[in-house]
Length: 150
Image 1: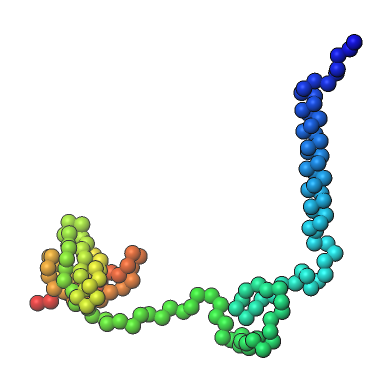
Image 2: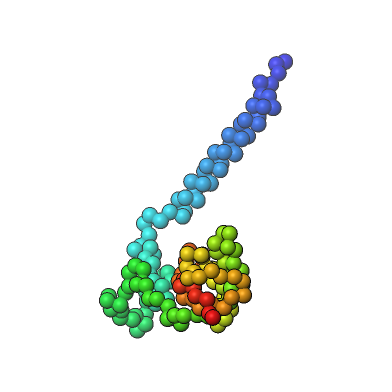
């Protein structure tokens, strides 16, 4: 009697081959059922409602608002400077003469404002009362035109 020519490895290869063919057939059937070919135009249309959301139904003509093209602003809005008090009063809370910078505590808003030695009209020390103006710097407010109050 002869031995069977089928080995365990051969059976496993055949089994995986059949499993792959079955998976391929299932995927093909799924694609066939879910394809978008042959759908009607109405099924493929999407509408935007009055709030800007996507919708399947057309918008209600009563809710449509008329918008003038001139009122639409494209780009960055023009710069409008903040309206603020020009001269502020404060107290120097920290000043390092060696490094040339310090901080002023604004008496009105209690904010800490950076000050550089280049913006001083006379030397400052801690706890000096000063008047100053501010401008927007890279990291926040910066004091300019700093003067000691006598």
